[in-house]
Length: 327
Image (cartoon, rainbow, N blue to C red; front, side):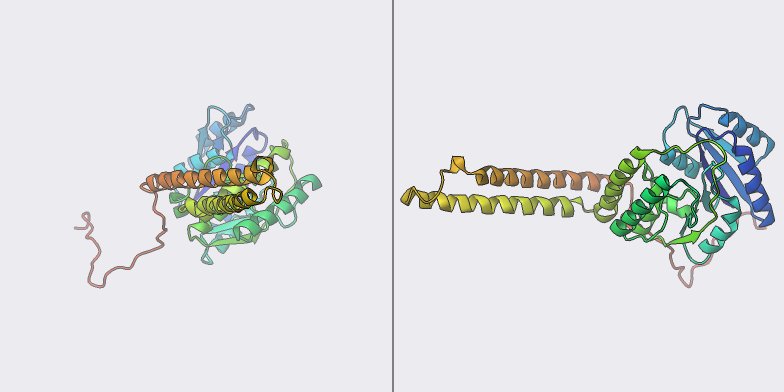
């Protein structure tokens, strides 16, 4: 079964149309499906529409938040409630075309665990398109996950991806990056992108600032999440060593000045003393933070394995467990 998870925030005009398009696509492709609408604290009539759709259709379900918690929280709630073996996500504003669902499934069946949509012909204003191009290029460069559109809301996943990936903050746009870091295979497919008919974009300039900070977080989590001291300790050792070398140099010049007072300035007049002391302090602090991070990582790792198992072999002589209901 396919679970279609749709975060909703003030989208009451488009929900009924979106449901009808998904239903037509699923019926044409002979798909068993469910739709989960996650109302992320909407202030319009979105929940009324969701409630009506759920009463009219047994495969439609709704979850309503008490307030706006963000898209990552809405997706997490949907992933937890989803019953399907495959999970599809798309935005509620009708810009993602449900007719692409069979194409994404076909791509997923080529051996991928995650398939991300690519709005190749994007019908958005230029002030959204060009910053997005820069951001996507930066994400691909820093993480090594080469996708044209990391932030596309239309994606397809195998359900096991979300047994290992937990979302918080605004990390939803980096799910493919987090999945590949766990060993899942990530692919991409060009999809049809449509013009916005209802509502307005929820994102502004602050989105790009937050996105960059989240990118740094993801880079740290995927590169050093299980070994934070490797990064923090390296920075600390380099800084401490640099400060130590500066102090050694100053000690040598101080001894020389004892014999020849005119050769060097007094230590209290030399900025190098302050810089060297600051470098040593910074190095010590970074290494201390690294040790604390290692302790936290070791504690948290009790609840999450540092590896990902795809499958296991079955011993030759092992027989399947008998069915207790078989006479």
